[in-house]
Length: 113
Image (cartoon, rainbow, N blue to C red; front, side, top):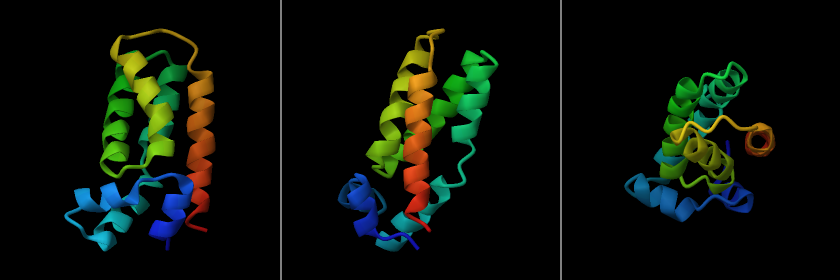
C-alpha cells in the first residue's frame, strides 16, 4: 500500500489532500489508489488520436478534477495543460503533454509496487 510519505516524495500535497478528505488519511489513500485505474488517462490519449476534441476535453476535465481534489500535482500538471487547451478546442500537437502524463503516471504507479 502506498504511504503519504511516498506520495510527498512524488510531489503530492498530501496535507491538502487529506484535509479535502475531512482529515481522514485512510480515505485519502483509498481514493489515491483508485487513480491508478482511472480510465481518463487512456481515454484522453485515445480521443486525441481520433481528433475527438470534445471527448478528450470531457475526459481530461473529469480527470483534472479528481487529481486536483487529491492534490496530486505531478499528475495534475500535464492534465491541466491538456484540459485548458481543449477547453478552447485547440487542435494542436499534444504529444509532449501526453508523454509527460505517461511518465508521471508510471512514476505514480511505481509507488504502489
